[in-house]
Structures are given as C-alpha cells and as structure tokens.
Amino acid sequence: MKKSISIVTIILIALLLLTGCGSMAINPGSTSTPQLATLSSLPPKAESSQVNTQPLPTNKTDNDGSKYKEALAQISTYQDTYFEICKKGKLFDQDDEAYRTKESNLFNEVTLKISQENLYLKQYKEIETELSNPEYYKTDDAGDDFHPNPITVYDIQYRRFDEYLNAIYADIKNKIPDEDFNALKNKEGQWIKDKETYLKGTYFQGDESYPETGEFQVDATKFRCLLLVLYISYC
Image (cartoon, rainbow, N blue to C red):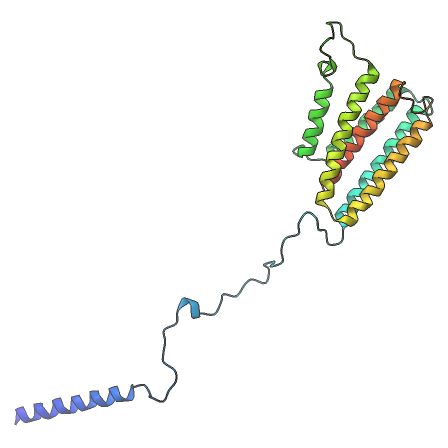
C-alpha cells in the first residue's frame, strides 16, 4: 500500500511540473523575445544643463567686439596724452627735465598695464637692452675712442623699433576680426599724420640733419610699439 501511494505521489508531482513549464512557454505567435539589458541599450546619461556645448571662440572672434573697442580706446587715449606731452615739451620750451619725467612716467604707466610675462613685452625690453649697448653701433674700423654719431645712432634705433612695430602689427592682424583691424588701421594712419604734423611744428621741422628729429622718431615709435603690445594683450 505504501509503495502505491509513493508511485501516485511521484506521478502527481511530475504532472504539476509539466503544467508549470507549459505556462512559462513562449507564445509561438509572439514577434518579440525577452532580452537582457546591455550597456548599449540603456538610455544615455542626462547631461548637465550647465555644460557649454558651444565651441570656444577663437582669437579672431569677439561676439560684440567690446574688448577690442576697449583696447583701441585705451591706446588712443595714451597716444593723445603722449603727443600733448611732446608738444608742451618741444613747442613751448618746457623745461627738458620736466618733459622727460612726464614722458618716462607715461611709458612706465603703460608698461605696468601689461603682464611682465607677455612675450611681446619681453622682446621689446630685449631690443631696448640691445640698443643701449654702445658696442652695438661700433664698426669694424672704429678705434678705442669710438664715439658714435648721434644721428646715426637714432637712425639705427628708429629702424630697429619700426621693424618691431610692423611685426606686432602683422601679428595683431592675424588675431582679430577684420572689422576691428580696420579700426586699428585707421588709428595707425592717424598716428603717422600726427607725427608729421608735430615735426613740422618744431624749430627743426623734421629736418633729419638735426638729432632732435631722430630722437623724436625713436621715442614716438618706441611708445607706439608699447601701445600695440598693450593692444595685443587683449587678443
């Protein structure tokens, strides 16, 4: 009797297992099959709304041109101040020492507005150091008592700084939008005219046989270099 009950029990268990498996079978008419989620099928991670997906502006872009307008206005103000100092110093026979002090202070003020790590400012100072050495002007046939002609010295200095001025000017052209460069170009043209006007108003009238002409050309060009270094620091 016990053996018969055991057989019936086993049969019932088997039937129950078969019934359960049948309820879990996939419907043959279904077009989908269950799948495990993979990394590629997961929804993308939401990005923070604070992330700026726009490309960073290049040197030649400035949405409203404000920084270049600010730079141009600043160097224009300094340039006007420089010419005012020159006119008072040369045209109205102001004490030369007082004139030199004001000029030097203006140079220093502009220099302090530029980072001392600025490569253009470093090059500017290197040229200054190079030209301050008397040996720079010494020719091969010069004797031990060599004394360079002031006119020659000023001419060499002027050409050296004018060359550097053009180099900075070219670099600025490659860094800023055309509209802003044209505005700077107009100011450069005005600077040249103002130099000529100033020289014509002096007693030496820009005559290159006077050392004063060369001296002014050097100082004016050096200061313009410094202003363009200040300008390019905005780029």
